[in-house]
View 1: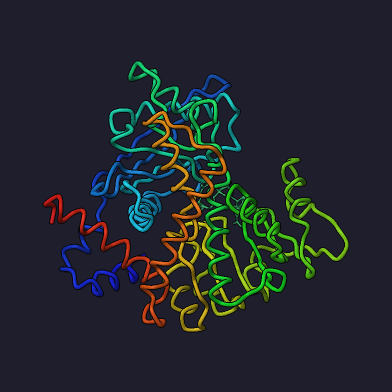
View 2: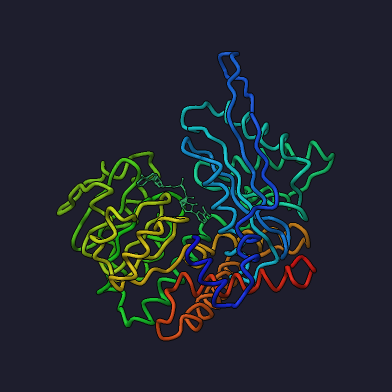
Length: 407
Ligand code: NAD
């Protein structure tokens, strides 16, 4: 996000040229992906991979399959990955990929052909020491499995370290599936501790009940937090005394939509209503640009915990800052996922297998350390929390670029 990046560059007293370097991706790959449909017709999809910065290590970042993917969005998400990996102290740079496609409109066989085609286009530009993709919205462990297989066929040997968040049988990390929600929960506990919020008295609304939102909700619910609202793309539900998240999770796992969940005292609400509920903590965990100048002034939460990437836009952030809403930025709040990916990558390269409990403990330690660094940098409110996170992250990327003689 540009204003925080500018503030971070100014705070660190860096040359303006550095801002330009940080804003410009190193490589942009853009291609057409022809896919044979089950009908025997061929349809072409647009694909992207943006490699933003690799001063600290191989590019790292997910692949999104979504009809609204744009190159601008992929560029923005790739630069967030550079900062996120630096903030967490991981030996990675940042990248991101995407395909303009609605995966729900394809059969499994068509999706497999699309996923393999994406890797054939990228094979010369990725690798365990070059660029290590992972899933994002619209992709999952199954798709990563096809992608690893395609890459391995091309190079002539099995190479699990090229992609993370794979199925366990292909070298995936036990715990990776829950890692982003788990890291978000670790941050929630830290924030609650700082603000003196007791779980039972703390109400939470979660927008998006996919991988990230659902596991986060489960961890928070089990710890006693009161989750009063959740939603998916079809709409949301609200229960003032708190929802039974295990029941909602089972309902969703059964293939049903959130608004179809029924129970005593449960009302249906829209996604727009969910964002302006009177809760202590609002957790956007769906897509970007959900809190903007249109609705930021109506947000009643004390804290916005950004589990999605970029859910608050620049104008939204300004309004929330003015209203003293504490925004915990995406590069910290959802970083548990990339820490899990790092453990998986190191497991594949070294052959040392992480036990699930050890992996989750390690993720928590690394996320909590990053939280403490951001909180300390924020001082007495000298910066908003996003800017504090950017100051830490930009400082590290710039030190690496200097050490390599790039600037
Ligand atoms: P997902 O596809 O599993 O889930 C997305 C959820 O959002 C679904 O419940 C979907 O129904 C809902 N949704 C879609 N559009 C919506 C809308 N307009 N309003 C409300 N809900 C809507 O995706 P995910 O992996 O959970 O990712 C969610 C966010 O978290 C994304 O911004 C992603 O970039 C970010 N993220 C994911 C990971 C990860 O490890 N999966 C890591 C870091 C960040």
